[in-house]
Image 1 (spheres, rainbow, N blue to C red):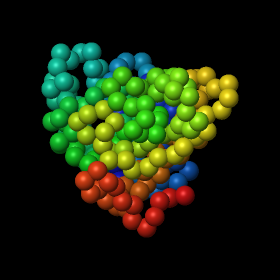
Image 2 (tube, rainbow, N blue to C red; image 1 turned 135 degrees about the vertical axis):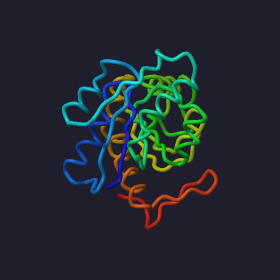
Image 3 (spheres, rainbow, N blue to C red; image 1 turned 45 degrees about the vertical axis):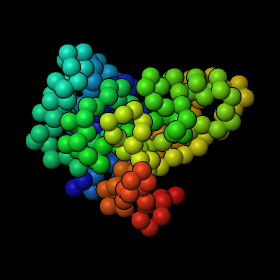
Length: 212
């Protein structure tokens, strides 16, 4: 069984997509062993509890340094035998020690087509607001490996979504969640669990072609 830890900070829509794809056997031989939330009382916690998944809160505000937070996260995962960490709306930066300990075993879903509208401070609704302010005709989502910076790790999958006339940041956010994020995040997990993703420098290669 391929074992996931899912890190969350908000409503947990992408966590729910993973839960649903496991439940309908789209993701086979994959289990979510634990959910870790970076703050208390999130919708994601409620989703995990409803699904019977162990959920822990490692509250970022309880720690005075990145190093202390990293150690707490590592301690929380120490006995879990995790194969892959999925950042599904996780709003805290992971430090260098944590990233090195799980090198090439952490992925993130970002709500834009990286390298557009990404980096420090661009999370949640902000990438969608920035996309509309810039006037782009397409946006989308990206699944990438996590390194020690914001949104700079090797890209695994991307999916474009049309920006429509009259879109607001909220309507664009919802459509990208539904038409891109919740599709390519489970696909990326399936590819990695099947051993079909290879990394070479900044490039990733999918053996046998991408999932359609």
